[in-house]
Amino acid sequence: MEMNIVLFGAPGAGKGTQAKFIMDQYEIPQISTGDILRQAIANKTTLGLEAKKFMDEGKLVPDSVVNGLVAERLEQADCKKGFIMDGFPRTVVQAEELDKILEKLNRKIEKVIALNVKDEDIVERITGRRTSKKTGKIYHMTFNPPVDEDPADLVQRADDTKEVVEKRLSTYHEQTAPVLDYYKAQNKVSEIDGSQQMEEITKQIFSILG
Ligand code: AP5
Ligand code: MG
Image (cartoon, rainbow, N blue to C red; front, side, top):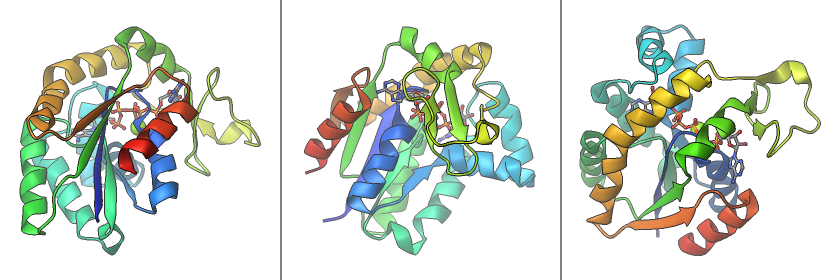
């Protein structure tokens, strides 16, 4: 069976962290629209420059742009066995478009895993995050401190300030939270307490995915 998964949750809920474990376990790629957009910014492409304006303000990049990126990514061979969507879909329009793209390929989303974390905990998670520019590994200065990393390789995301995180959270509640109802209506959602230890969350995800 194909493993077409959506990993859902607020900013800082742990989507990127858990996506890496799922990738290793099931040998399917992570499709992170945030990572794709940050790569475009690093490459200084027209798309990247356009997207940066929205991201720096904690707003969503327009649906048309992001939908196109995902449609292109899904055509690649490594997505044949399945994929983990991380940070997509983020609006109901994106969710509907994803269903259409998959339908054309005779495929569908099998499961949606939602990581629930309270707003109060999000700011601390986001401001303490550091990512290795060498390995792409995600750390937290308190909850998951880096080991064997050169401190010079650890970077903080441009949108990981307290001010922008608060905007990202309101964007999430207004535009992204309704996506969960969209998938609940399709009976695809499993919810997990995302405030647990990382290892415990991974265990629960694996037991849901089987
Ligand atoms: P994106 O990159 O998707 O960011 P996000 O959704 O805000 O989520 P994050 O990456 O911040 O958090 P995460 O859930 O991956 O958490 P992580 O595992 O790193 O999007 C960025 C921007 O791009 C958007 O604002 C938007 O502008 C644009 N964009 C992207 N996709 C788009 C789309 N589809 N449509 C339109 N625009 C789009 O963990 C966070 C921290 O917590 C880490 O430090 C980690 O070590 C720590 N942590 C993780 N798990 C635990 C745990 N269990 N206990 C303690 N600490 C933990
Ligand atoms: Mg992420």
